[in-house]
Image (cartoon, rainbow, N blue to C red; front, side):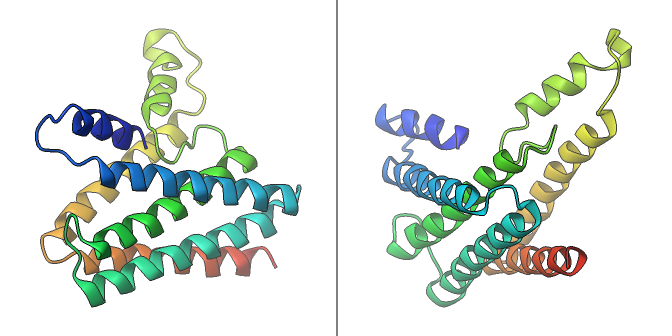
Length: 182
């Protein structure tokens, strides 16, 4: 969402021909997903496994719908199909972030690596820090980097491929999580 706010600023200033509507839609859908995640967290209380499982299932559904839209409508910038995908993905992202926030996994921010990088450097033994959380922080950074590389490579083929991959990965994670927590 940081990027959406920056893109919105550029769009409002008419810099680089960047859009205004897409980041507004994305931010609003993210807020709706985050609000829904907050409702789910309050209703589920401290039942973390069940809460996480429901949230992951809903995110998988949102990604699945976006994948279907991509496969059927072949979305492009400025078209309704593109905005529909933005809404589905941003709502799923908002729901995920509200869930992660509620569960409170340390050093695992899902959308902003700034604090992870800050923690990694600030606590590094090379700078006199205690080094705690280094492996987890590095894993989070590398997972984001590898995910970005894989997504960019898949986009060379078609938008449906990375969407289907993300949906499948979310589904496998959801099923595995539910199986482990029974």
